[in-house]
Length: 557
Image 1 (tube, helix red, strand yellow):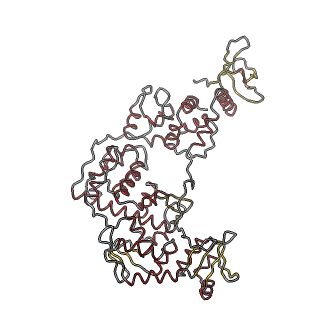
Image 2 (cartoon, rainbow, N blue to C red):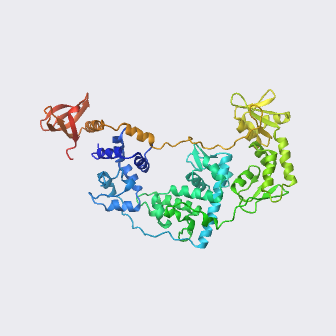
Image 3 (tube, helix red, strand yellow):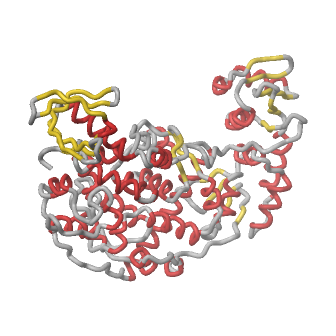
């Protein structure tokens, strides 16, 4: 057993829970690791692979200080000190042995972030606007149906084709998760409750949220460094340059960086908060973008045109009743199917027409009013209600519609079976209602009393879905074995290790007269509260009560 494990175990025991959690994350310790107490933790943290992971997290300044420190010279590493330095701030010997093999640390160029030119700032503003819009499109798609993921956690090829991925989808997905707007649940990407609020927010509010949450995920060294220097911030991490390039690409996409990749990296006015550690202000960004509008033109061909970026809350509601092409952000089209979806979500003819009248600059054209009212008349022809067993019953006054649904190949996954005057399915009523609507049947969801209700399609990640409890259970378990018996537990470990290795150890024994005596033993057995070993000096076999042993150490220490 390492002679350095006991002091480290004491350090871990005296650290706060927050310090322990930060250290465990930096060492990439699994939350379900089988450590019993701080002694287990200390031994594992002194393994070379674990130390290398900690060294890889050091910033260039920290790595330089560690590389230049002498054997007895204290070092200030702040949060990174736990597990690397002793109580006096000196490097633990196993750490020093690895540091001596690490490469030299490059000098810092010391460049400050350069301000962006007007042209670069305009380009960054345009990218930020497009990125926030693309992120909204991704979230709206996930609200309609959770996005399927493959085993690696990436979006499936099917989803990429459906969303017409142009190569940016993975970056948008990363931004959504960093901003707390989406979360992976099993093999699905689902919206969080925060996403619903974000989707109804204005562009400035959307951008500030994404930029702020993105900044919170960045290593602290990035906040004080020029973008050109990001790949060199962690010189002992072989994976850092690729990660830094990815973070720089994300920052560029949301308008926190400008200029490069073609030229030098610069910082727009609204992004200086990233390096000044203050809240983001989107005023300068907003000044370079078109103003959001709250009115649209409704046309006789059942289309709608917005004369500029439509306010997100209005855009979201308009999308519930129209077909929308993301490539034509200001254009919408009403169809029978799109209006039917609005009815399934709880809309009414009067509610839809009132909303359109309020936001239209041209009134509601007669063809559009006719489409809404005719769809409303036909909408309730197929009624979907829950049954007593959690399944679904589908009924209709039109027997031909029931027959068509019963043999419709697109509806086979629902398992619709004829029963009396309707069809039954084991699938839930909301899923059945949406499946029928997507198959162009005039379905409406009703409750047990026959009253029409909205069919919620979004599957939101709940507060406890895939909840990350972090390291709290592990830390609690380690703390539970911390107490007055720690010395005895440590002594038992040292004796067990000595016996396993058949090692020669110096045992300090408390004698009956109160004196203490040291014996050099070759440990051979431990059991029944007694240690057995050959006394090297007297060349005899001795058996010592463990309760009389005060300490044990290697002859070389």
